[in-house]
Length: 613
Image (cartoon, rainbow, N blue to C red):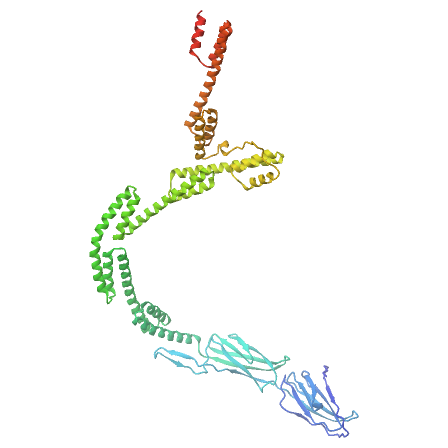
């Protein structure tokens, strides 16, 4: 039972059923020193035939927590919440409920003492650059900027579970805490002041503690030591690599050593000397690489020159043997050079005449003897030119075939590929004409499609189908095809419907024009002059030509003249009949009319004689 009132008195009673009682005061015993937040256990002896009542009350502080009676009243427990004195009273009660005697005890709790302990770690090793060896610091030396683990120890030991709250001065960082301890880090040397509080599981503060952690070793000292140690190790390894002729790796490692420890004279001067030797080695390597390149290009004089220079800069054991072999190559090459020059001159003559296949053959023979960058490039250009010309011819032929089939866009694509392979002014001009034809057909197809839509809205299905069909023939579009497909489900274009072609609109290619001219020539040869003239005019509408226009004009004039002669002859025949019938006046009038239709010298002479009579 817990009662919270001012000047609280808590009473716990235990009854023991026995037949004997006496008035001796109960003795109260505190087994161990009381501490804040930890359970206090009091013991008392109860005479037979009596019971005991316990009461607890604070003098000035907080009322104790977790008050209980155990062991049939023999033990009384509670948890102090502060360090103020606590009064505990034990009253002996007989079986009639009367208090026989009392005893009291003042309990003064203490806070737990908390010590801050530094947990030991590995001893630090530093590098002695003068002796080229490590030395070990005392384990008590602590270094800045590294984690230091500390632990809090409660004295006496707390019997239950508890938690810690840590704080530190502004220069000290608190890192990851763990059970009973925490890690700290300070960025510079100095004293780190650490404070800790302990709390039991109910939140009661058990006590406080503090400590001073002395940081005496700057982290920069450790870094410099580590760099100097690594620098020396790298320099030792670099010297070993240089001895084994791994020059590039040696210089790289020596540079890292010098960068790590620039104040070490042995390393810095050794690296400078090594680097100068490596530069000489590299110059010799480049000269030998250049010699190999010149040798592969048959520039043997240059190859020999570079080999000699390389041997001076960085001698090799086999260097002199390489120079002698190069000298022999120079002598042998001069003989081949003369024959190669003759083959090259012959190829150049064929090249200048545009005889590319012959030129290529002689260039390749020359290259087989003596490689030459310029001749190799020229031969490659000729090979590419021949390949492109072949490709261009194939594309152009396929384009022409597609154009004859009326597949203009496909033909245009092939013509374009042809001129990209081999530029051709005439074909390029034809491409522009074909692009213009396609654009005109697309525009006319759109016009016919709109006219078809208009006729369909007027429910003139046959006319709409004709216009849609002409639009598709002009240039197929998805819209026109869909419209015609819909109308064709219940309708059919009337038999004998005349469909206009692109040529009827004057839209066509030169190939279309030539095809029409050939058809017109055939009609003319068959005596179908009127049909030939109409076909000639369709060709002229596509590709205007003054010569073709004059030819059509001549044909039309011939037809007119033949018609006039035929009409005039008919009039003369009628006039002759009238004259024989004695109707001279009517006959003369008709003769004169025939002259207006077509001139006739005989009729004119006849009429002249009639005037003279």
